[in-house]
Structure formats: structure tokens, C-alpha cells
Image (cartoon, rainbow, N blue to C red; front, side, top):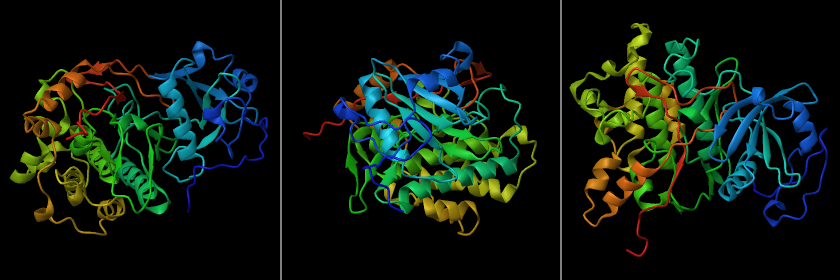
Length: 398
């Protein structure tokens, strides 16, 4: 399958318009166009009762379209220029691709100064809001369900990385961007930061963007993104799903705020001791496949290895999760930790990065499902679902 950022307009039941007057939007074709009026009707005039999420670049509303379909409407704030760039990227990436484990874009509205993405509504929110949301969900995440989610996300990423051309790097794989439908099938969402990469390129040099704690260390410090950065993020996500623990805990000291770095349950140390099962979510009450859970945790370590070239491609990860490829313990090396990499710099870059991260405000990621209070917390876990965008501290003149 070929994914091309040049689009032709589809014939749809919604208004068929020619986009004029805005140079940034003239490339949008081959996508359903909705009028602002019909989206106002769908959401009861964007009433507060219809609002189900809020992010750094706007709000998300639940609505019912003219054909009866439930939809999630992602409304861009009128004064967000950065949001416009992400709006365009999201359309270009997701319009031409379709997979069971990717969200479905119904269309958009670009009438006047309105910028709205219309997605299929997903009933069960995101992993961040349900599995990691501190007891706010009634969903029971059995081992079989977690297994299904892990494999589904891996398949979606393998599709983006390897099965379409140009390949797509998501750049923001995290729990709040994995949405769940009524059957708890996972859907990768939020393609606003995604990048196309040609098969002949090794990396793309770009501004660093993503979410603290999920960023591959080499990408965070050098601004060079590869598919290996997504694989690192997936490794963190896999660890969250198996352990039932949120990756970020702001209540801990700075050097222990992220899951891979926590002293009490550090995955690498437990792996060396042969005690990885201590990481499995206690709420499963030992009702899980021991061999499979151990394998999944080892795969998470393979995906987060310090050397990017050692991280397996996502198609291999899928086969490992399915048990079709054996995980060899001796091939697992120490994970890459951003804190350790920063400490190796003696020219001020590490200190500057730490200061930037400390001063970066969290913003809630936009969900396409039921409403959720993102500021809540439970126990020792702070459920903060942040999308952080910041400048690379890598000095490209060096």
C-alpha cells in the first residue's frame, strides 16, 4: 500500500467544497468535508455536555452525525498556529491509511477559520484513562485483554513503519494515545506529530516533540528521529500495560519519576536477578500466563535498549509477542535512560534539558472517547497525560 500526501476529494454525503483562500489548506483533498453548521447540530451547538476532552490545541466533543454515526470532533483553537500544523499533518497521515489498530478519520471541517477533525467515536477511552487511571474505570483488564492490546498496538505500529510507503513515524506513542473501542480493540491515535520517512533515509532531523518519559534518549538529545524512537516508546507502553503502572509519577524524586528508573522496581535490575514477575500487575491476582508475561517484559527491555540499532523492528516485535520468535536473554542489553545520557554531557546541555523539562507545563491529550478528569490521582501514581513539545537542546553547530 502506498501512502501519499497528495489527496483527491472523495464524493461524500457531506458538503463537497473546494478549499480556497488559505495557502496552508490548499493541499487537503480526498477527505470528507463537513460544514460547520452540521457539526454544530451534531454536538448540540458544541454544548458543555458534549465535551469529552481537552488538549493543548483545542477541545474534543462527542456528536451524532447526519447518518446516525457517533463521532468525536477534535476542534482546534482559533489562535493556535502550531495546532494548525499538527491539524494538517494529522489529515495527511491518517486520510490515506486504514488499519484495524488505527483510528478512523471520517473527515474534517475547514470552513472559515474553523479547523475540526471528525473521528469515529471510541467507547472505552484510552489506556491512560482506564487501565492507568487510578480506579476510575469499571473495565476489568484481564491478562487476555492486555495481551490483545499489546499485540494490536504492535501490529498498528508495524503497519506504519513497514507496510506503507513512505513509512510513518508516529513520534508520540503513549498510553493516552491508545484508544479502545467497545471490544477493547486498541487504536493508535493523534498523528499530529507524525513524520513521513522515505525507505532510503536513516533518520530525519527535526525539532524534538513528544512526551517526557516516552522519548528515546538519542532522539531527545540529538533531534534525529528514526522508527527506533517509536519502538522505544512502545517498550515503555508495554511495560505500563503488563505492570498496570503509569510511566510517570511526579511525586517521586526527579531521578525516579519514570518507570524504567524507579529504584524499587527497576526492570533491568529485576531482569538481571531473574525476578521480572515482580513487575506484573498485582490486580491480576496471579491469574496470568507466567511464561507469556515474562516474555512480554523481556520484549519491553529489548525495545528500550540503549543502542537504537539493537531494538527489534516492529514486525519482529509482533512475532515475539505471539511466541513465533524466541526471545534470547543474552541479546537483551541495558535500557537507555535519558537521565544517564544527560549526565554524560559536561557542556551544560544536560542541565538545560532538565530545566526545560522541569518548567514544561502538562497539557491533557485529546481523547476520542468518554469524558475523563485528567487531573485525578490515586495512591502513589499521578495520572498526568501530557503531550509536551519543546525545542531540541542539541547544538547542531557541533
